[in-house]
Image (cartoon, rainbow, N blue to C red):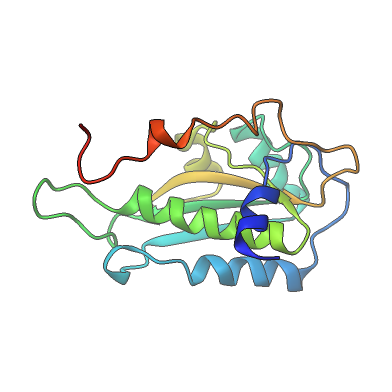
Length: 173
């Protein structure tokens, strides 16, 4: 699938089959995350792959947005590893983790799996349930699995602002 088709095919899957994700496919997805670009190539991202019942029960304690997925990837960043912009002290951690999450989603879509980017979770509860070290900050949950035959994009999925509203050339005037 070319990138244009891949980007168009990806949508937030909220209905998953009760079918495990094969380790080979999970490995392929995780490798895509490993190869994602990060600021200064600092690679502060950390991915927790949750695919066992005990861990999935913990996910359910942290968010109501697992949607029955048989696996969840929790993407975090390490505060000791991110790049810091010298002009204002802004750190790259959340952006780097977001780029990684995008790579994970697109790779999953390319091999016939579905995902949903979830930001609706309790970070403190997540850190406690999964024994995150203090230096790790969770950014996204990514439920992952095979979409049900009736899974479909949300009604608003295809609604996009016109290009003129989001793209400017040379300045914002």
